[in-house]
Length: 292
Image (cartoon, rainbow, N blue to C red; front, side, top):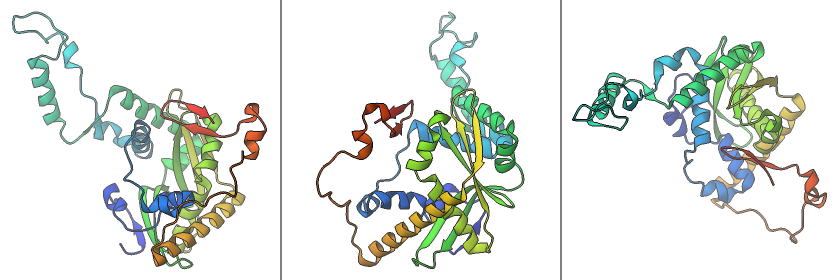
């Protein structure tokens, strides 16, 4: 794939581009060996919800056109057993109706009712917040692929921008609880990701856009927070991704992919010495936030 800006590129085609991206930099940050042996991304309920949220929020007018819920034919009063009794089981009639419905809706993607409710609720929540709507749903293009050559490392790089606006790069993040979003912002390196995206776009166009993050909860009432990434964080993120790209380039040159270095000794980190009452590390699962 040559350097450039690509609209309407399918996700599978983007994933097939052999280039460094934010995900590979996150693996390198663990260790080069983690990147070398990284398995294909497993699908999880959290990832599925994230994909559906992106689809609904970035292209809200397409939700009902592209997605459909399979009706509960088993609860239909016409569902009867062979001897004419009312049934709530998945009878031959139910299977026939389901098959017919799937044929009629073959161009759509099937989702559960709670998933469709989430999509519509999140899209409405973003649309109700002026700043979030301006960043993610107004002028611009969604799911834009950029490919560029990093001149310092020599690596081909790629990124998938959620929403590319005239003056902004908009990125959508979903979470369970906005109170803990700053932990994800730090631990997942969102500030580094946005510096990487902004610099990649600037490398192609000469224009430095302002990165914004829109964070939204995945459960009602779908609260939203939106803000640009601070310039200090972008500077730190730029320093971090450049260091990681340099390591990546060296590993590719030498074909050596070391694991994380061993410590001089095993010792509790400073935050653990302060006691459990001051725990500051959290892990977000599919259903809850867990302090560790």
